[in-house]
Image (cartoon, rainbow, N blue to C red; front, side):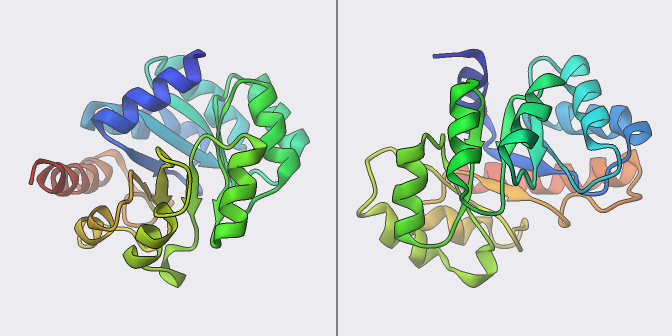
Amino acid sequence: MNEPSIKFNDAMRELPLVAILRGLRPAEAPAIGDVLVEAGFRLIEVPLNSPQPLDSIEMMRRRFPQALVGAGTVLTAQEVRDVEAVGGELIVAPNFNPDVVATAARLGLVSLPGIMTPTEAFNALAAGATALKLFPAELASPAVVKAMLAVLPKGTQFLPVGGISADNIAAWRAGGAAGFGLGSSLYKPGDDAPTMKRKAAAIVAAYKAVASG
């Protein structure tokens, strides 16, 4: 098992929450990253449609070697290679693209493609996906996760993304979700470190309350 996979598995056991930092600017990355890591986050995603995303990824990868840092909205195999070139270890996509998943797997990166149907889920796993991002979660429900887990290979991990907040983590967890991607409920462009600290603490507390119950 390679280092990115070990980091991913450790995070999924300890705090399976992906911080999605869409709109983050490189100058903001150190302070925002400090708050997240201090709160316990070890899965950090900077979508590629953010300003200078590779700069932010490279900085946080060096600053937080204990975390699994990478990119979201990865749409092409070349973008996977670009992320890997700056040290990124996490590849997240809104869709399932066989070339993206296969390239990530070949480079030893953790890959979370977006899926919505059983067909996409099976194909993504066959291509080498590490786990599955259910996106957009607003179009699905915890019952969908439960139904797909009944037929997918044992050990398949679902991470709903889209509309996830401290208020609905419990319902998704009950349906079998292994983790969650947090976007606007955690970070919005322009949020400062104190704001992030408050949001992160609330979400972490909500998750831990569910996990311990």
